[in-house]
Length: 96
Image 1 (cartoon, one colour):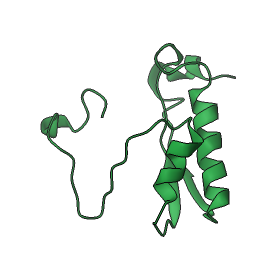
Image 2 (image 1 turned 60 degrees about the vertical axis):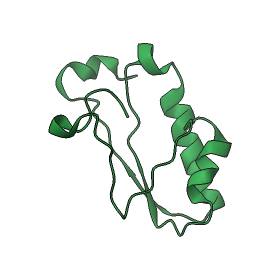
Image 3 (image 1 turned 90 degrees about the vertical axis):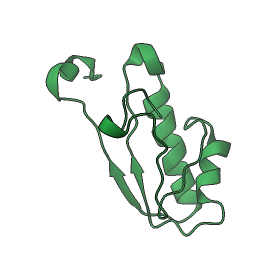
Image 4 (image 1 turned 30 degrees about the vertical axis):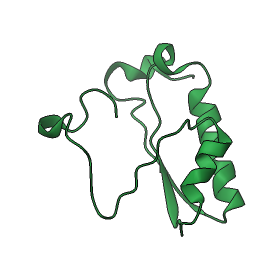
């Protein structure tokens, strides 16, 4: 998890009986496929982000593409995308 997540619970393990945590690279289709293996996935939330200097030029596009392809392969049709582009000074980071 990124530094600073969880506020007062920072550095404490994140756990919930309804939560499954998997590690992987969102730009790697094989890692993304693991999310769907043996699970009945109803929908996906994509919340990728970060400064280009930290995540690279193509992580957002490549990662979202890998997720959407995984969804198609598994018949998942519900997608929600969370972004902070446009909040605060981030508008200058948007690719438009």
